[in-house]
Amino acid sequence: MSTPEPSKTSPLRPLPALIFSSRWLQLPLYLGLIVAQGVYVYHFLFELLHLVEAAFGSQTALQALVTSIGYKTTAPITTLNETVIMLVVLALIDVVMISNLLIMVIVGGYETFVSRMDLEGHRDQPEWLSHVNASVLKVKLATAIIGISSIHLLKTFINAANYDLKVLMWQTIIHVVFLLSALAIALTDRLMSHPDKH
Image 1 (tube, helix red, strand yellow):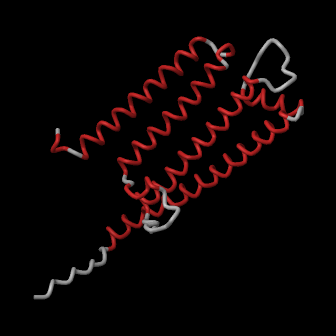
Image 2 (cartoon, rainbow, N blue to C red):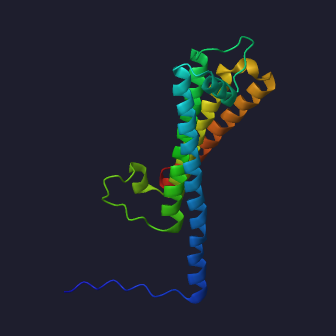
Image 3 (tube, rainbow, N blue to C red):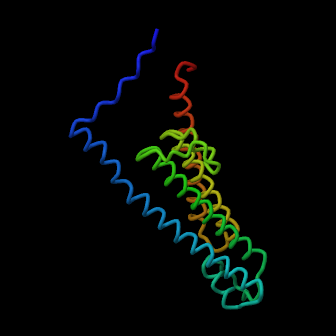
């Protein structure tokens, strides 16, 4: 007894085909994010170069770093101190985390909404991409945003003397809102994934 062959997919009618093909309009958006990623790489290397130059005693690089991180103090900064190093490193970590967020949006968004990338079996396939869908992507993005917000908040607290109390308060409130939003997204995803258990 032979098993029936699966029926071949019939071609889409013109209007559904046009609507389905419109997903390719997102391609320039993802290419634009790749360009933005390149800008972040340039910014990271530029700041890293300034940090290395300042470590070797360059006053020009040191002042460029102090200006870029917004660090202010009454005493003149003539050498690279621990606070400046910490703020610069946090700024570099911030760039890396935003870059990770961009990769998640570019790769995950393209795979979910535009076209398959056929990475199955590829040795460099990201682990999270094997089970990515719109809801998983939302949870991962929310988690990445919390990480970025945490770095910003830490930078603000280290440099708290240069910020108004209202700025500190609002940054903390916004961070807590991000946390609650991520928890709500994760809970909603869990409830939708396992409706029979609830």
